[in-house]
Length: 239
Image: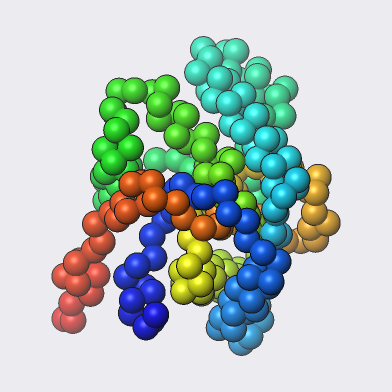
């Protein structure tokens, strides 16, 4: 495809087929992403690639933590505080907070995007159970066969996050070009401990987020595209 076609056809994929991603395809994809630019070519990021039994074990651990933390958050305040101090289900993210209410206009856009997605999925706003069940799918990577986790060295300050974001975008566009789908997931940065069980992650590197990767299926949710900014909203006027 032409680059413009790749950019316009990329979607956040939330339903994957059971077709496996071969090691050869994955290696080609990652080598392409390695061409990403970074500040002074510092490349202050590392990735952990989970597939097969490791991906399934991590997904099981993450889903368990999600449901247990969800139950804790619904407890009365005194009990909630005690549970939060004693349970291993509470977030152990490297960057805090990972999720929460966004400020101002960003929360409005977030809510609009979420409501649009729920509409496509047929989930009513008041259906808390269905919303929780959909949220839980994040932690099984929407059944994608591959999950990629992104880490940065915080000694590079904010540039580490900038560079990691560029790397992720290159990876997502390269995946689209190869017939694969991706979903960048901030939720996969909530718990680091399940990853430390399976990967020898350098202690100085901090978990940012994750990404589901695989072949999209024909579920209608994969056609959802939230509204983007207009140029008037994007471009800052001159004085």
